[in-house]
Length: 256
Image (tube, rainbow, N blue to C red):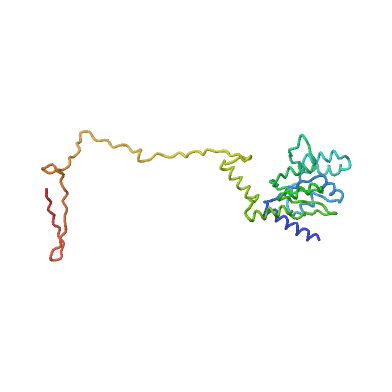
């Protein structure tokens, strides 16, 4: 059963790697319900999740998830101790904390741009996660960690990309980076025109040539003219074939 479960997990991870550009180390958002279930079933999260996902992971949470465990009292004290060992990611509710489910949903936004896995036992949060394409979901059944199959929203998104109706996240990222390089748009999507510097062109070398100075005291030679004042025509030689087969050059007569 364990081999079959890992094969299914490998297939699911390959789906997210190929279609949603997931890469190691995998970032896993964990809430208090998952830590409580792991504590109850004696699961070592830091050891078992990397083995199950067959890769390097980064376990993280949010301030809202920690605050929620603090308000629930001593019954979840053990879960709070486990959750405090993970990295705390900054969320937009620092001054006004919200519930963990609402906070995690806001961290994923509409397309999960930071490629988070989510580990939770909260059914309301799970229902919201399945409406967002490209969100791998981890939960605990009895005493085992399970990676859920891709949601129908994720499958529909991939099919739409293959049909050319949508742009994949990898293509969106490459387009965004190209826009930033060319200065076409900023993060807010506003257009910003970046003036390109005009290349400095060298002057035309012909225009830089110095004009030839006429030597003083040397008159320009006059054109040769005939007695009547007309320009003298250039004489040309025509070749005539002699009867003996040889060629002789006979000057042509020109009239002056």
